[in-house]
Length: 212
Image 1 (cartoon, rainbow, N blue to C red):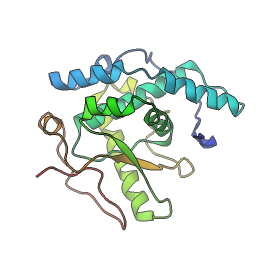
Image 2: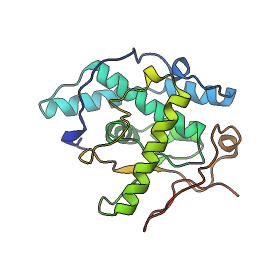
Image 3: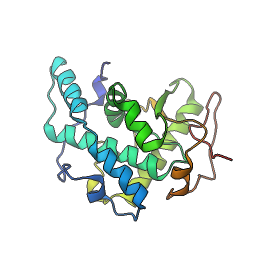
Image 4: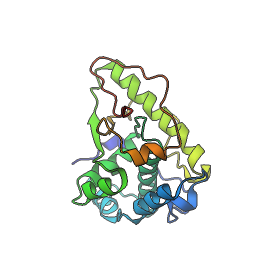
């Protein structure tokens, strides 16, 4: 896997990201959510951080430990949003996606997903030439980004990894995909309802559907 050269953004500092998801959240969540958050926090993301650091060094660039820690926290927040809002599809920006794709290649990723979501969370690549699909997935990103300050204290939502908007040259390349049937436990404990509007372009298949 090669990281795209545009994906590195300057690290501008911010709060200590050695805290946990439970430390940074502001929304009231169930005990089941707390257990899943603890499992996400318990995952060892150091191999992901090392891989990205080493890849950058091979390209003649350096990233700070702070950048890597903030990236790992942003990825954990992405997983947390999927836990709290399982009936809607979500997308992350390119900076988080690089961390996510590296994590997906780890041997423990499938076990991680089964323990938290009850199924594998994969990613679906989008066709950058399909403007309707690109529009839908960018809307997914905006929706996901707007949920963050409703769940986590704003100072822990790093704009380096969760920018308000994605520049054209730093495109979104994929979105989250799950099976059509969301496990009952996730549905029961969800914090958010399915979105009323979901535009669908040619060739677009919603990542998540409500189990009937």
